[in-house]
Length: 583
Ligand SMILES: Nc1ncnc2c1ncn2[C@@H]1O[C@H](COP(=O)(O)OP(=O)(O)OP(=O)(O)O)[C@@H](O)[C@H]1O
Image (cartoon, rainbow, N blue to C red; front, side, top):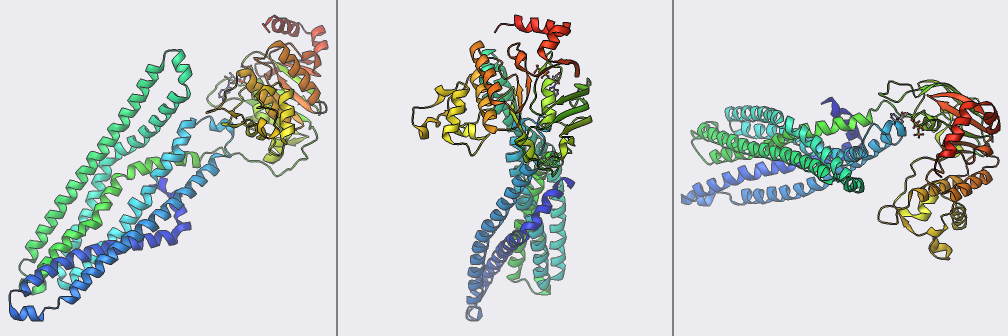
């Protein structure tokens, strides 16, 4: 139950609406109970009154008939109001909860987010939050209004017959305690399975759709489909078990209601409140029948409680994630290239026993163009990831102009670096939208110029400036080749106008001519800016100010291209290997 506490705190902000919703539910219940018991009494009393002439003349038909109409109008109106107000309150709560969840999720560093699968996060954001609507609608509201109605019925019946009042109260309280507890236990395992299986099916469906090309190529579509079918069968099975429990709950409620009615009939048959048997017996019997209207939602609430609790637990995992990212208040003037320093940096990825970076010391002077070479997996991209604060070093200091990088505010950090990472993401949007991500204020002419510079002018539609950038890219639009994607990434980085360019294998997958063009473009555009370029290519190294060879998370060699060629055997070996690579 502790898992629900963070969500219950949100209720305070909508206490007025939630309270009004419960009041209307209570009116609906009481009006329903009053209607049934009064109608039962009215029918019997009318029948009895009709037996004698005096009875026919004395019996007041008008007041009970009016009361029945009044109660039925109150019941209808309050039920309508209850639905409107309770659902409005619930939707407001869900909206707040989604915003809260998103607010906690968004500041998590990208590295931390990798611990969650994207499909799973989507499921938490959609299905798990939806499951929280049970908490107010099916748990709190029925619990409060059910217990108040039971007390109301007790007070009414006690007015006519104290003993019968206590019997009704006792029986209803026993049912209100035992039935929910029993149904909670029954629904526990299938409820948890339902949340888990729903998440698994969603993840499996997204895997099937997103990886379809890969699966088809390796003839693994059947295998993935089978995984999906297994996930679907598991979900259907947990839904079937929940439906079975719902059926059982309805059966238990009907049987208990029938037994209670029978008991009250037997107890009242000698007369209510010490009187001779009269139509009040019908009032007692119908009152006990109506009483189960108050208990029925309670039983259902506890059956589904396990589903809400497991959804709450999954949401809390993200809400209480221990790794929120903190940015300092320092707002730096972003146009000037800074001095960057990795000082005695140690870093390992979670779960990895090997250190990725071990006591790494490196400096990037303002305006310096530095290339980093090294074998696959030696930690080159990790160097950039630490700079972008996707991960935090476990020891050592990352300094920007001599200040800890963590003291910089997030906007200044993002304005300081322009990145072309190994994986360039394309949004399902127009070409212009995909570029304006990096420079929202850029004019159409500036976008066209940069596209021409990176060799993507063939994506422009016609000469008209307004229409030329409207090509739809990504899902539902034109896909880009690997080389085109890299060039688009470079175009974004150039538009970003940051003083430090971080380029992770930016010319990988390009033909030699384009590679040459891109290299010259970088040199041209990055005059006066710092460049940190990770590369596996020999081309362009001579134009860099300094080259660093990284090995097993440490700097093995450092110097200018000419220096290293002259003095360093290993660099010569690297150079030969890179030269031998097909271009
Ligand atoms: N998110 C991660 N979680 C766990 N391990 C990771 C993660 N990212 C990278 N690694 C591991 O850390 C090591 C260094 O990775 P990194 O990407 O920095 O290498 P790299 O030198 O850039 O390699 P490449 O030249 O192939 O791009 C690798 O062994 C890699 O498998």
